[in-house]
Image 1: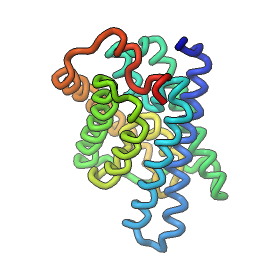
Image 2: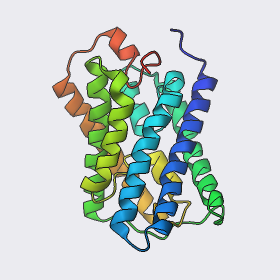
Image 3: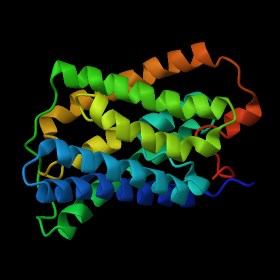
Length: 237
């Protein structure tokens, strides 16, 4: 199957990232409103909606762009040869712009200011360690499936992992620089203060480097054909 033109793939990454941010932030706003101050219930609702939404979003846009919606995923995919470095560098701003757009849309849907800078500080040492672990786990899920011929299961597996990681990581598993930046623009349940963003992004990139080492150790062999269909192959969903 011929690879779609870059402009179509960038549109898919933009729209997918926008939907992802809208799902994460919008469900957080709704959960906080509906849970009557019960934070654990709100977090469960936010996690469940995010997991289901991510599954559907990957199915929607994966056949076009590979369904990354995450700069770390794109950069690691480039390292393994599934995406050119040029295309990976083009994916990143599309993903960030999409997450910003999704944040604005989520705010407006709930009759809030289009942009409200978050005041929720998250960058403790424990949170940063959690982001390294969360990102490492996400990449292991994606690339272990790609390297063992099970990429068709990736949408469900990624959704399930992120839903679980909301609870087993202290940071609630951002695991994505683009969504981290997007969540900065919503002072709501899912928001993150600008001062916390740089440390989170660095922790996520560290998680990406650790993931590369782990993937090479666990799955050292991959054919050129497998590399070309890494992450979410367009003919597998």
